[in-house]
Length: 129
Image 1: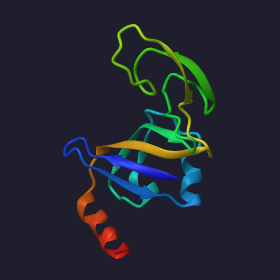
Image 2: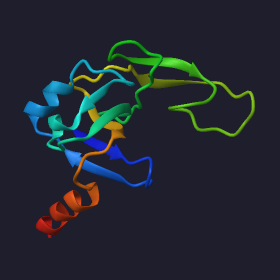
Image 3: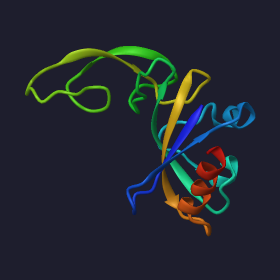
């Protein structure tokens, strides 16, 4: 599972791959909940879950309870991209609860830590090369 952390102040986002043991701690959390950065080795940070997608690419929506995939009638919002006024379509979306089928979690930073994310993630990029 991947976690994408967005910084609303700078507009930058950072991505991190989670281990299976850490991944299991996210099961049952819902869109809108906050968690401490210690879960993903970022001391002092606090994050809010804003969305995500499952292994097939279907987006998570806050209105759907649980972690089920449903086909719902959409006019706009997450999972629907259209500029045509009045258009409604049935689309498949995933529920708001994180489970083992979730492939990506989107978060935003609520509270900053002492270390800057630019410095933390530049080190990892240098090691990969």
